[in-house]
Length: 187
Image 1 (cartoon, rainbow, N blue to C red):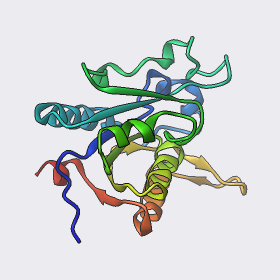
Image 2 (cartoon, helix red, strand yellow; image 1 turned 135 degrees about the horizontal axis):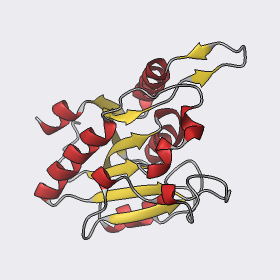
Image 3 (cartoon, rainbow, N blue to C red; image 1 turned 90 degrees about the vertical axis):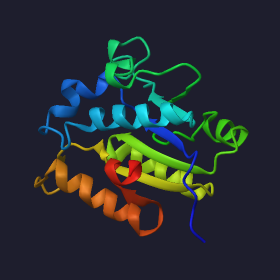
């Protein structure tokens, strides 16, 4: 049976100023520097239809982290600021569902379909997509609304940011999410 994606919740993961911290860039630049612009377009699209929007933000346990609540990096990036009546969920673990109100809030909204985007593809986006699917949600992952950084393998070899992104997207496509671009989604 085909899924009707009307009124799916847009879930934006960890698009905070902290993603620009030096820590993330130590291995090199991320892929898809346009991700925030894509997410801003998705926000505009969702807002014009009055569909549910959830902003998930990370709050690190470590006071030294750019994602710590007392750090300037904790704030959402300007292009993806929250709007009136948009849900904000703060997480302290990798998945947006672990020890948060996200699942309960989505159930209260009667949302069983999620469109997910954010950073980074191989961290919180991956964990949240997998968890959402395990909870029974239908999930679409907006591939051009996500980004990853290069990754050093145990051997010392480097995997490019684009390869990291592509590998994690391909893995999620196996059984966890339908992969879409923002243009496909808004067509």
